[in-house]
Length: 137
Figure 1 (cartoon, rainbow, N blue to C red):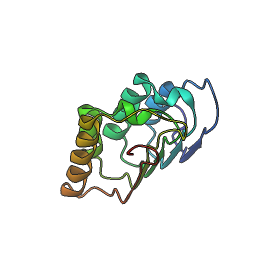
Figure 2 (tube, rainbow, N blue to C red):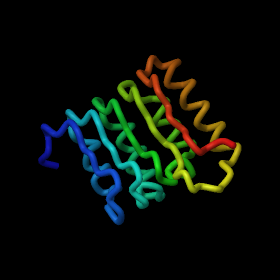
Figure 3 (cartoon, rainbow, N blue to C red):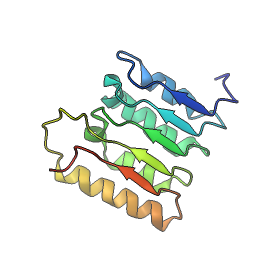
Figure 4 (spheres, rainbow, N blue to C red):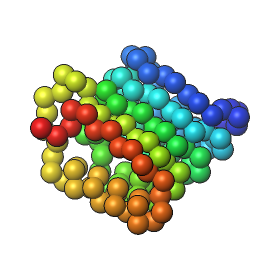
């Protein structure tokens, strides 16, 4: 990773972008504050979930993460919840589903997310805004 000075990355609306590879490498970027991969179809896959989990665990600078408009919400699990709960710098997280989404979010996903938010607050995390459009009917 050579982009040590990179602070903002905007890749929204880029179909077929292999975002999981980029996100994983950004976890080691000491200044990254803002990542926008909203409306990128591949941002909703399990590889991206794992890379995002590692980003939240490793990064000491990420403040804004926009993954809205993908199916990332369906990838939330206990491991992701722990990473979100432990993160101290993330202030704004958008995990909205695409507007055309017709799936029902499983109860355990909502439960894991709720626990993660509570843990983030308990551990003095910075999370202030969580956007979840089109997720709960």
